[in-house]
Image 1: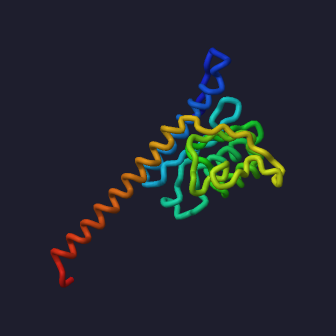
Image 2: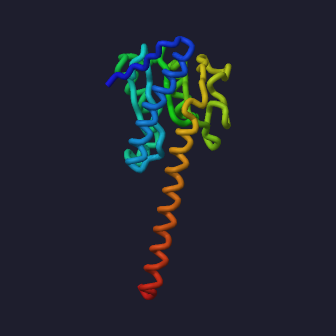
Image 3: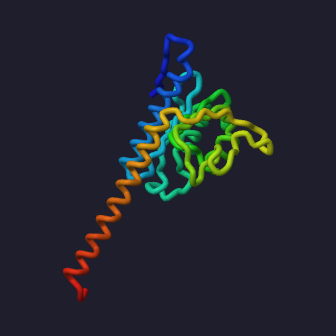
Length: 183
């Protein structure tokens, strides 16, 4: 399903498009959250059309490489019939990790737009910056912070709920042990 975002004011065109496509990435992130996955979503866009979509599936698939970016990149490469994603833009709700930045560089994605930083494993400025590393044969233009608060809020809410559920399970275990001390 291709989505196009158009705006009549040329001065606002880039920002409006970035927000629209990031909103699509947030839809993917919501899908991940419903599956109990960390809510990260991504879309790959070429010529105003979404050609790849992805959301985290690491827990569901038991595959550590099924990050949102990796899935979206694979779909986009299949749609183009080429591993080179030249003239494409990747939108992702969370700053990519080392693995995903490696794939972005190897796929020759020229432009990355992400929502919020990942201070633990981010590879676009938080702990590393692979996007402009001169040792690689490809550079990536980066726009940071598009719908950043929404992206951050979704992640924070997910982890807050996860911690609350863990606390409830622990409390139930304690109560069960008190009711049945000899078992």
